[in-house]
Length: 332
Ligand code: ASP
Image (cartoon, rainbow, N blue to C red; front, side, top):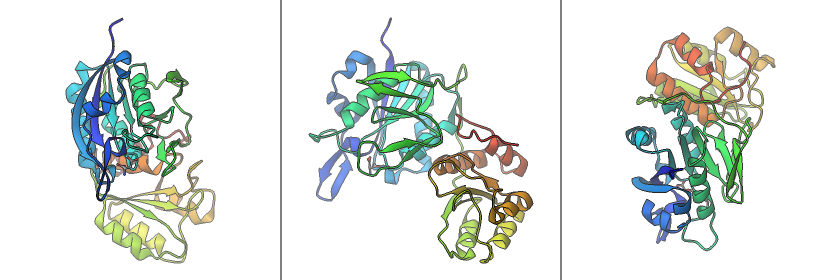
């Protein structure tokens, strides 16, 4: 069987970082990364493309569009793609690419590391070769391969800032694991015969994390700057009843803003109708809720949806329509 052709797209991050006078900064190019793991040439035929060289703290939605465009331009020439990326915002990028490139039969694998590839103790080499292995196998769609786990792009969250096990799969099983570098697939994502690419995002999406006693002026401020506000509330979801939040939200919705309630709790998602503090929001005001989606996926999905339409019924329908298994909650 001919060897798989895989394109390595470099964007920066710790994996490609070197020590400078002011701390770690990306410096290595993709061909230099590959030279640290010569065994990758036994897995596949790899080509290199340096798209960006950034700490992922600086990654913005315009870069997500650049990544999607780059994959589209090379899509027909390769069997799979590996993107090296900083871990800090990798979950956002993985979610965004899941909306910008839908139904891909070819693997689009993001990876990175907690320690630079030139360090004696590093997770870079394992993660990079694992990513190439998965990109060479039948793992359709966008995923993160990290610390021997394969995580669906819409379900990843960075949950550890230092240890090698940086990412968790939220409210969804791993797609697979790697045992001694051998990928074992648990779930095969469904895909289309060919992907659909999108090229528009509306970045006017804001996020408000509630703290006890928060006043409505914070929500008022963010709603004035945005087309959609995601509110990370407490537990299964609700808003404080005594700070004018309800008036603020109903006023904003009457002005055409989209409001989504989600939760600060990492696992199991929202269920806004359960308590009085949430019930009215859902039933009378028509606030959307995130259910089992990650905040990263909610933000990226809203940017994608609002890039296509501002029409309320369409926004609601698209929000609750699963894309890459981002939402599984039974919708009534
Ligand atoms: N600050 C780095 C980044 O996200 C962290 C990492 O890659 O692990 O680019």
